[in-house]
Length: 465
Ligand code: HEC
Image (cartoon, rainbow, N blue to C red; front, side, top):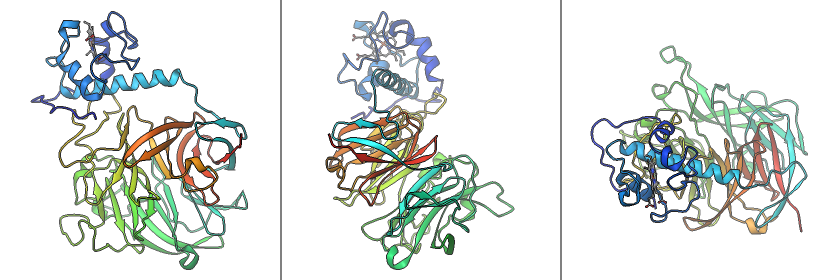
């Protein structure tokens, strides 16, 4: 799929904005809205050249099909720009498909229909401020993080009015704040709760920088106590700006703690093994380095790195049957990814990507390269992918072990049925009722969803037909 023949443009690549290029060079024939004119529609997803895969479209635009009236563009456009035009055609085609499709947009307590199950959305808690993540204590209490820096407790279905006191001070700016909460699988005996947050730096030389930090602590009444720092980046590596912190945490079947760290808006850092950003990390539950980590004991790499070449990974979950680590990664404009994470591998950002810059200028023509992993799927246009989880409950039997994936900008919850490393079915479960931040298979068998705008946690409950 989608592998390009080697892009060959030499010298300074042209990086002009994609919609202007389309208007100037393509609209005459294919129509200003891409719906066709004197040449065919580019939105109907019917292709005369091959199956209309990325590589074929790239080739047709580059080389043309002069016998049939399509000029070649290789002398006017760089390979990067041609790649951006392919992404642009995909964006417009998906927009057109969404406009022509009705997706479930359930109001509270209304029944919605999907392919395998009917469900009803029940509001669990409202009145939160940008909820980010949820997890449960063995007694059924639900913990919710709020991005501005509060940890909240939901007990017997009610949000306790006071937040947990004494949690770390976060830098709440842009995408940063209090992000992930994770209850240790052995909580019943050890009482540990883990938090991930963006930590402001305190040193005078490095004003206004921050990085993702992990702590663990215990909850006594509504007090955060016995806090220990589990992982913190060295101060020299903290970055300015308030984007791409990650951060998800998950315990693996091996008892290790895996977490994601975004590249903090410094794309090249993702390829730099001496820096911790743009990576998936693996540590022992107390923060020490497992001796079998790929870079353990090396002086030229961060010892906690498990994989690299990541942009902003915001979903992590272990497959309940295979024990493999799956990851969702927020791409640029286009190129959101679903990956299977393998020890020591390079996932390519920003050397390869299926996306372009938000302003419509290209990043690269490369979507694949030797020594770099391909995603299981990529979403182009982006859905603004965020959290994900495998459904492990019994209340929706036909969804068992399906992967649920969230979209912020697209306001979608998606269900993916997998066969090995292939997606064999993908469905939009609902769309357009708020930004979908996170999804979690609850211990009670319901599927919980964290929504932003209006800020709330809801759950999907089955409705028998
Ligand atoms: C002079 C008219 C003309 C212009 C300008 C033009 N095209 Fe085309 N294009 C065509 C025609 C005609 C075809 C169909 C060729 C065929 O049937 O084999 C085509 C085919 C295509 C295809 C393949 C469609 C398929 O079904 O396989 C793509 C993709 C495409 N054009 C993109 C573009 C882009 C991007 C631009 C601007 C950079 C552009 N075209 C500019 C006339 C044009």
